Structures are given as C-alpha cells and as structure tokens.
Length: 197
Image 1 (cartoon, rainbow, N blue to C red):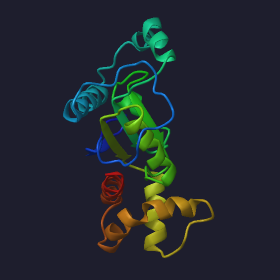
Image 2 (image 1 turned 90 degrees about the horizontal axis):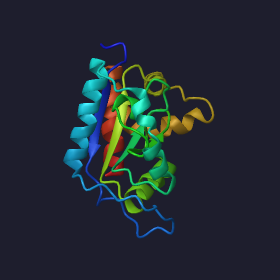
Image 3 (image 1 turned 120 degrees about the vertical axis):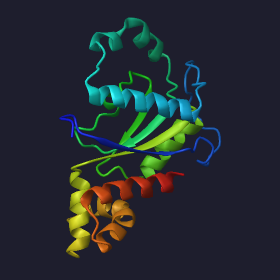
Image 4 (image 1 turned 180 degrees about the horizontal axis):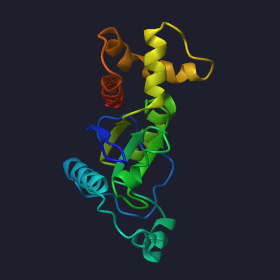
C-alpha cells in the first residue's frame, strides 16, 4: 500500500436522479462543465493515479491569480464528492483537482445524511454538477467503530450514535457474514451511493 493510502471510489450517475426544482441561490457566472459524467470520472481516476504514483504538480500552479479571480464571482464544479472527514482523505489533493473543480461534502464515515443530501442536491440543481462520487478509505475509524458496535451489540455514545445510524445499513450485512473491515468500507460506500442515486 502506498504511504499516501489507497482510496475506494464508487460512482452514482445521478445528475438527473436527484429531485428538486430550481433553487433560489445563484450559481454565479462560471459556465457549467460540458464534460460527460464518464469524462469527469476519468479525470478523477487519472488524478488519483498520478497522486498515488507521486506525480504531483507544482503547488504554485494551483494558486494562479487568474483562477482565483474567476472563482470570486461564482463556481460551477462538474463533480460533487461525498468523502470521510478523516484528515488523511482530502479529495482535491488525492484527485489532483484545483480550486473550483470539486464540490466537497465531508462527514465521518462518508454517509448521506439529510444535510449531505441537501448539499448534493444543491450541487446538481444549482451548480450543475454532472457527477457525484462517494469516496471511502482504508483504516476508517468511523467504519471500525460502527463495525465493533454492531458486532458487540453495544451502541455508540450520544452523537456518535447518529454516525452509526447513518452507516448501519451498509455495514450490518458485512458483520453478519464475518466480512473484513475493508469489506465494510466498500459496503458503506455502495450503500450510500445507492441512497444518493
């Protein structure tokens, strides 16, 4: 495994599957992406391949004054990402994407709560994102905690129980089948991609 870690990526092709009408908030003058969801996914995969290989761009290139000035007036990211809040999982870095490229929602355990669903719906309906991805990662503390809570039939403490409730549906079948924690990571990603889709 790379010292940067490996990341699991599942897609939900849902630019048209999130409900909702026009939102009152303006997206700004930046044009929506004309790339197809498949092209957007290939961009992420290529960025992640380069990241894992250590083929990193000059960080100064992403801080170009022209790019910053353009984004002051609005945003139109083609890709929305739901990822874990883990400090080691930073979508813009691991996919080599710059400012304005990704609309990122982060929560421990990368699960689709109502707040996350609302944010993703905004990304699609207002910002015209054309692809949503759900990213899980190895050694996820939230997955481990929920896995153990289910396996030991011991609920998590207050507030952490909300994380457990959001992740239980994907992880419970893995625990019942004596699957691995990595199996639980994958199952959690798939369950939440299906919930979004």
